[in-house]
Figure 1: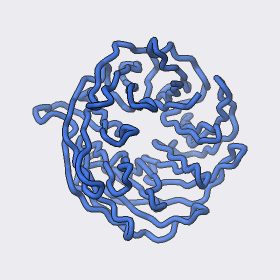
Figure 2 (figure 1 turned 60 degrees about the vertical axis):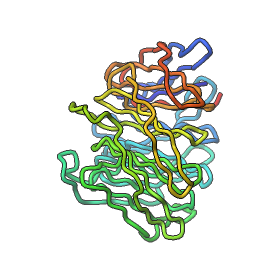
Figure 3 (figure 1 turned 135 degrees about the vertical axis):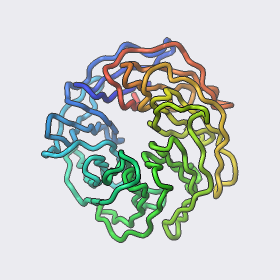
Figure 4 (figure 1 turned 90 degrees about the horizontal axis):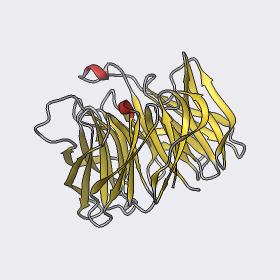
Length: 338
């Protein structure tokens, strides 16, 4: 399995997970602060890019073990913190935490970006980290609507969106409990249920999604850390096993990965705590699963380390492989097919 790693320093890196473990990483592109990465099925890698006061998105063509620059969409603004690719409509959704907005782009067969539409939110929440709107995640729901998470206002917005990337009406707004701080979400494979990571509350909210109306209602709220923990912590990433049976969350500060088993009918999923295990590093900001769910790779930002775990595909539980490789300030890790 080939992995690309985004960093808080200078460079996009690559490593491979083989039967012998993680290989020493190599530098793919010398680009400033590529803190989040995503890729399209037609072979393009999209990267956040921040150099001083100039920020935005850079596009690269993936060519074997090289990244060929194709386009830059930069301005005097902060870089996005999350990028979602819609291959079906050749669109890219960029979430801007510092500006409180999301941008919708089209991308061409040559890897060129064009801005289609934007959504700007205003407001704040009760915590110091919520002094203004902070859009942290944007994606398409299975029914084609656009979902936008705002960590700053504890909100999830549901929009109708055209096939050409134009925002239409706001059909629903869901308000999480104050101080939840929604960061990322994942849809259950059955498409009726949404798992939302609350970064500031270290909690996962399980919501039922009504495809007829685009509205949501909460069915469960579950902690990502032990009840006796009293140190600083915050949710980092949330991912589903490809088989849909297990959910994984990283906890920064607590420096752990939490595993849940997913139970219940498709319209009312429930999470059952299964395991909490040390991430084998400091500040696990992101992680990813291998395509067959048998390995999990963690980007530990503050210890400059990628660590790996073997996954029991029957129980979903993790076992450290004691295989790690150094990467400077890794904050995003993505598998890319060979």
